[in-house]
Image 1 (cartoon, one colour):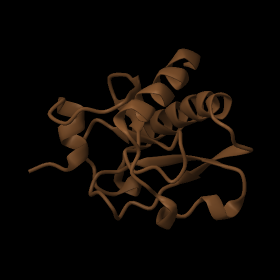
Image 2 (cartoon, one colour):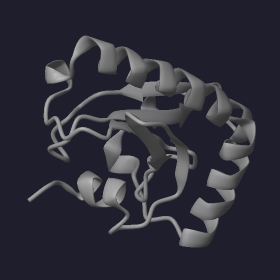
Image 3 (cartoon, helix red, strand yellow):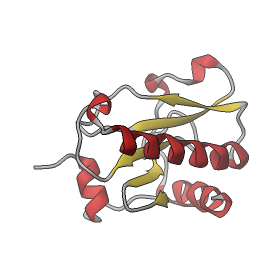
Length: 129
């Protein structure tokens, strides 16, 4: 059985999609550290980021850059931080977290967000992509 991300890719679990192409998907994290916190994932199920083939990894970083620029323009932050931890879901993924200061990048700060608020944030970011 695949991870929760496989279910999101297959459409079994809905998401607030920001960007999608043949190889990757970006969507808002439902438990964001800060509003606008997004994920970039490969559609191919690969557990460990360093097992992602080089060409696909380049695609993921390029997508992350594009989405981060849109997030940066959409929410109040100094910049968008990037985290690749890889333990919380067994599917390679990149976190894009809007930050004002370094202490903002802390998963202990993650909180539930309403579907309506996620939808508003996603719409604003998508408009900039």
